[in-house]
Length: 345
Image (cartoon, rainbow, N blue to C red; front, side):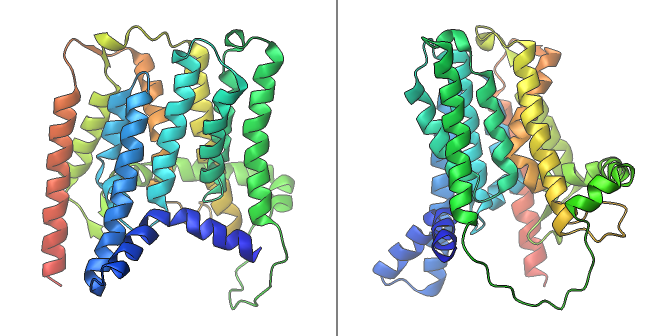
C-alpha cells in the first residue's frame, strides 16, 4: 500500500517535481524554485492539450475553449493534480475519437496507448474510470475479426482495473478520528432508494448554477476570490462559439449512437462524482450532496459540448480567432481582479 501511494503521488505531481528538481540543481532561491514547479505543470498541460487538439478529428475549438477557461488556467499552472487529470482526459478523449471516427482499420495495438493514458488517469480520481465506456463504441467492422474488438475492450478495462487494484491493495492503518459525523453507506442507500434519489434530484436542481459558475472560474483561489459577472457570461459565450459547427468539419459523420456515447460517459462521471461525495463527505441528515465543486466536471465538459453540436448550429466562418480573443480578455479580467484583491489584503 505504501509503494502504491508513492507511485500514485509521483504520477500526480511529476511535472511539478521536475520543475522543483531543476530549481534545486540550478541552486535557485525558494520563490524561483516554487515558480519553476508551477511553470513545468503549465508546460505539461499545454503540451498534452496541444497534442490532443491536433489529433482530435473534430471539435478542436471545444478543447481550446475549455482550456482557456479561467478555472482551467488556474489549475494548469498550479501544484494540483487536476492539471494532469484534465490534460490526460483531453488526450484520452482525442485518442478514442481518432480511433472511432478517423482511423480506417483497427488492430489490438491501437488500444494500448489509450489504455495507458486511462490507467495513468484513473488512480488519481476513480470517478473518471467510466470514460472507458467509450471503447464499447469502437466500430467492429474496422477490425479484421469481431473478437479483436472485445479483446481491445478487455485490455482497456482490464488494464485500468489492475492498476486500480494495485494501488488500492495492501494493509491500511486505522487512525482514530475526532469526526463523529454519520455518513450514508451503500447499504443504507439500497434500503432507502426514494430518499437517496430525492437527494440527487434536489442537489442537481439547486446546485447546478453553482457547478457551472465555479467550473468556468467565477470563484478562484480557495473559492474566496469572486470574479465579475462578465467572466461567467463571456466564458459561456466562448463555450457556445466552440460548439458551433463549421463547414470544414462536415466530413466527419457523427451518428446518434456517438452522441449517446458522449452523453453516457459524461453522465456516468458526474453520477460517480456525486455518489462518491454522498458516501464520504455528506452527513446523513443533509438534503443535498456536499463537497462537490464545478472543477470536478471540467475533464468531461468537452463531451457535453460535443453533444451540443447535435443542435447543428452552423457558421460559415472560423470561430478560432473569436474564441482566442474572448478567452484572452476573460483571463486578463480575472488576473486584474485577483491582483486587486491580493494587493488590498
